[in-house]
Image (cartoon, rainbow, N blue to C red; front, side, top):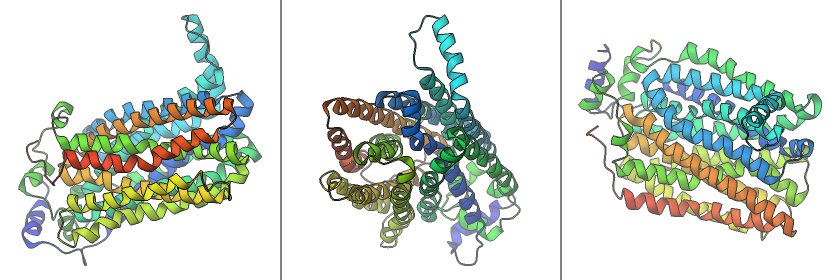
Length: 470
C-alpha cells in the first residue's frame, strides 16, 4: 500500500482546499494537451489534402467517404479495446503504445500507393473485385492511424481521473481537449504549404514524427500519483479528497477489473454511449468535410482555406475551455457535479442551432457559414469536455477507460454513418447540379443532434447516482 494513503484518508475527513497544495497535476494536463494536439494534426492531414489527392487519383466523394469511414470504423472498434488495454497496461505504458502506433500510421500514408498495390494484388489473387489502388492504400494507412488514435481519449481520461479531483476534471478535460482545436488550427496553416513545397507525402512524414518527440517527455514526467516523486503529499491528498474508503482500497490494488457485460447493465453506460453516438459524427463531419465544403461551394483551393479554417477552429478553443469551466457555476450553487454538468450541457445543446443559418446566409460571403459553423463546432467542444467527464462523475477509476471505450465505439459508429451518408448525398446532389442541398441536409442534422442526445441521456439517468457495486 502506498505511504501516501494515510494522507489521503486524512484529507477526506478534513476537506482539503486547493490553495497551496501544489500544481504538478497541471503539468500532466499540459502533456495531455500536447498529445491531443498531435492526435488531431495527424488526423486532419488527409482532409486538407483531399482536393489535391482527388485530382491526382480521381476520387469521388464516395471514395473519400470510404477512406474516412474506414478510419472511423476502425477507430470505433479500437476504442472498445483501447480502454480495456489501457486499464490493463496502465496509463503510462498504454498511452505510449497508442502514440507509437498512430505515429507509425501517419508515416505510412506517404507509402499508400505501394501498399495499395500490394493489397490490390492480394485481393485479385483471392478473387475479390478490384478497388482503386490509392483508395486501398489510404484505407490501410487510416486503419493503422485509427488503432493508435483510439487510445488517446481513454488514456487521457484515465490520467485526468488519476490526477484531478472531480470538481476540477471538467476544466482539465476542457483544457486538454482544446488540443483538438490547436491541432485543427495548425493543420490548415502548415499542411497545404508543406504539400505545395515538398509534395503531399512530406506532410504525413513531418507531422507523423512529432509524436515520437512527445513520447520522450511522457516517460520523463508521467507516473501514477502514488509513485510520482514530484507530487507533494498535500497535492496528492487534494487530488483524492472526494474519494471514499472503497476507492482508497481500489487505488491500493484490491479491486478486480470490471467485465464489459457488467458495465452494459448500467443506464449510466448507455447514457454516455448514446450521447457520443448522436454527437461525435457532427465533429467528424466538421473535421473531414469542411475543406471539401469550401471547395465545392466557394471553389477555394487548399492554400486559400488556411485562414478561414484557422479562424473557425480557433473559435472552438473558447468552447472547449469555457465548456469545462461552465458546470462549476452550477456546482457552486449546490448542484452535484453530475447535475451541474447536465444543466450546463442542456444550455450548450441549444447553441448549435445557429448552424441552421449557415446555408441561407451563405450567399453573403463564405465568412457567414464559416463563423456560424465555428459557433456550432465550439459548442461541440464544450459538450465534449462535459460528456467525457460524466463518466468519471459516476464510475470508479478502474472502470473509466472501459466505459470511455464503449462510448467512444458508439461515437465512432455514429461517425461512420454520418460520413457515409454525407458522401452519398454529396455525390447524388452533385450529379443533379446543386450539391449545396446535400450540405444543407447535413448541417440540419449537426444543428439538432445535441438536443436529441441530451433528452435521451437525461431520460436514462434523470438524477446523479454513483456506481458503487462494481
